[in-house]
Length: 211
Ligand code: SAH
Ligand code: CA
Image 1 (cartoon, rainbow, N blue to C red):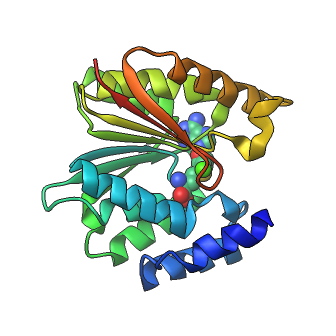
Image 2: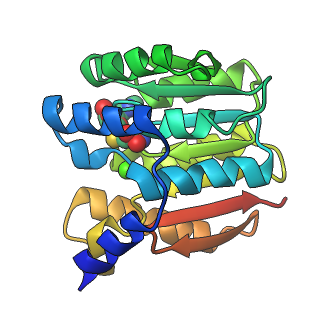
């Protein structure tokens, strides 16, 4: 039943365009773990979050082959900018090739290296972001959330992907599941944010900094 409803949701959500479908297909055919890309439904949701919030400066943690970066960047205003980081030179080569194909791709800046280092550099440079999308290694999720809180102003939004980890957060049986479950609790009890944990796809935790 769950698979069927996921299929129904996919069928009743518009494609983001040919470029996205081509990227999804190339990823499935040439890269390991293609299910990691956010896909159509979450891609559309991210795009809508950017549009609704009016975010112009976006930071992404976890590029992979670029689907989510491309989706978010497509909704940025003319002066908008998105920095995305990853440690995988192979997947990000695919990403960069698709960024180069998209008319809005020049808004995307790819930084190769551990995200903790990239975020520390951005904090030191006093860079500011309206929206941070966290989607890299789960054991660092709490570190990414802390750094993101330093990088967004009051009103900024943090979006945490895979917040349900296929349901494993109910009874964490791995380091990844434990890390995600701990971050969910931390966010839910953080007085600096207003938040909602969504069951979209693999779970998306939204946290808006209010103080
Ligand atoms: N948002 C992407 C999917 C990201 S998958 C999309 O929609 O397509 C998670 C990515 O996190 C992988 O590409 C992996 O290489 C990257 N990653 C893992 N550890 C990392 C680290 N320490 N720093 C930065 N990226 C990391
Ligand atoms: Ca993900």
